Amino acid sequence: MQTIANVVETALARRAAHSPALALLIGLSGIDGCGKGYLAAQLVAAFTARGLKPAAINVDGWLNLPAIRFDAARPAATFYENGLRLDELFARLVLPLQTTRSARVTLDWVEETATASRPYTYDFENLDVIVLEGVYLFKRAYRKHFDLAVWVDCSWETALERSVARAQEGLPPEETARAYRTTFFPAEEIHFARDNPRGTADLILPNDPHLAERGAAGVPR
Image 1 (cartoon, rainbow, N blue to C red):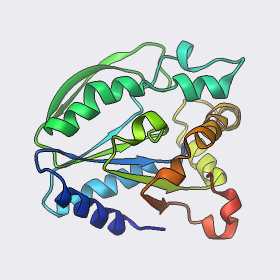
Image 2: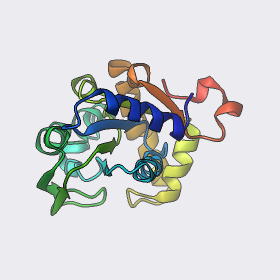
Image 3: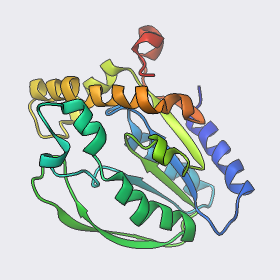
């Protein structure tokens, strides 16, 4: 198990070993509600304190519209397969930014509660480190792109508590819990079975104060 300081030191070592013409690409992934955004902000602050120019990018705006990402007949499989436009994310933004350290890209941004997209522009220049955070980043098709892959450990119980508290999907607490139990968490179970994201990560970063008391059985593998 690692800490933010361990992640930073490992990232700096890897950056020193590869071309300065490239941005270091760190993947920060885990189940919904594990705290990826919070930890990404900590990493950005740590790299900035070291004199580097980092940026955090999350996958949230790269959702597909509800008609594509949801299907009552097969909710988990549909969300795993079509929840996010990850091919577009990597092709249009992440890989060009990793290669050139700069990018200006306008996309169709989709909020969790939206039924239509809106334009949003990313504008980055001379980045040293990219912290890309989100679910499903370590699918087999994308894992190879990361210079450092960090899995955030969190139990289902804690993740659900956080997700209900933030109400990101715009649902009442009972409906939020139902959506996570019937769609989001089962979709992530498919991810574990097909892609082994935790097992292929370079580092495991715990972010759940109850992990020790709940034990390994409560941690998604």
